[in-house]
Image (tube, rainbow, N blue to C red; front, side, top):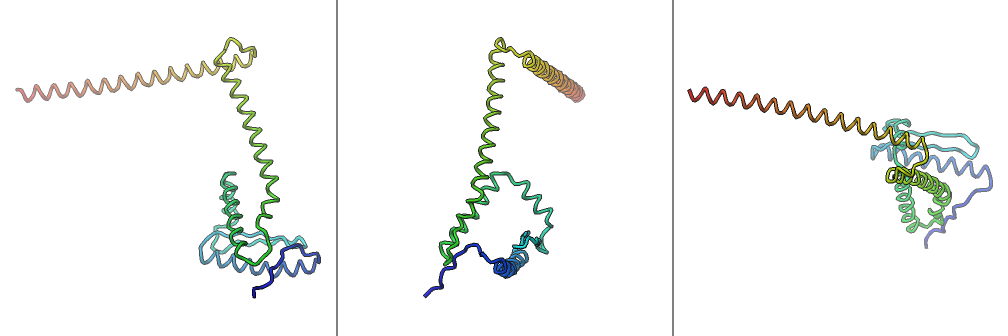
Length: 200
């Protein structure tokens, strides 16, 4: 006969929460230390007790909290979402084979609203950029229809800059071509002198 499923829910009594927190924290810290030593991975844990007291743990073999946070900050939004989805999927598999009533899907409920808001904000920003780029493209296709003097000035400056860039590239190409031609002439002259020398 299996053990009775443990229902994971909030403890109403503050003392009970504190006792359970202390006990579970010790177990988690032990596992974190083992993981840090056995697998040589960076480990950083931040706890906040029911009374609000913070506890920070950084593994001895870790490169430091600042290094860990820097690597996390360099992750793109897509990578973070992918890792979160992978973690939830792994928890689901563990949950299915366990006797606990804890539902790992509940981990995603709190973040769904924030994630959705981020997607909406990003979508609005992309739409705004698309509108701006589309207008610029229309202006270049139909310059006679542009009625904004500032836009005309900007287009003129862009054309001047592009023309200057083309002229600079043309001059550079011409100089390179002249150098190659001179080098070829020198090589040809040397070859002719050597040929004449051996003919004599």
